[in-house]
Image 1 (tube, rainbow, N blue to C red):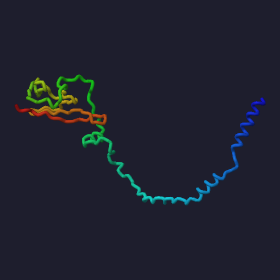
Image 2: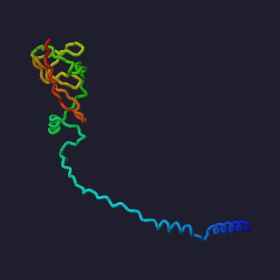
Image 3: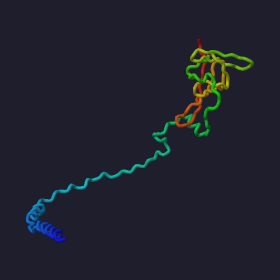
Image 4: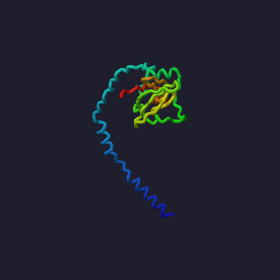
Length: 173
């Protein structure tokens, strides 16, 4: 235990011996720093007066919402819900775009007016009121000697459906 104690005393004596009482260099540096002229502080910038703004367009359409047409707005206001019957059997002419179908004639049979429709492949088909054609759930609502009125059910872009009337007129050949 004597060796450890002696070594500890020598260590502390050397450590304390390194701390001298001469602080003249530190005092000279402090005096030099305090003798320097004080720097100028920039003045606080003048702020422009705040002009408040009141947002008064709450009743207008939000800028990121899809704009609604007049018919869509009327449908939303009346509360009429339109959707296609996805469970019914699809008819043959529903595989063609309505733009590719053409009315080529009429046929009356037992008091029922039938319309002859030519498809994109050249086939001619007989349809009447209540039949479906076109890819957008188009239902024939009226038939006449010169035109067929169809109501399609198409997506409205916001998760719902809207009705879109279409007319196929008799083509001259």
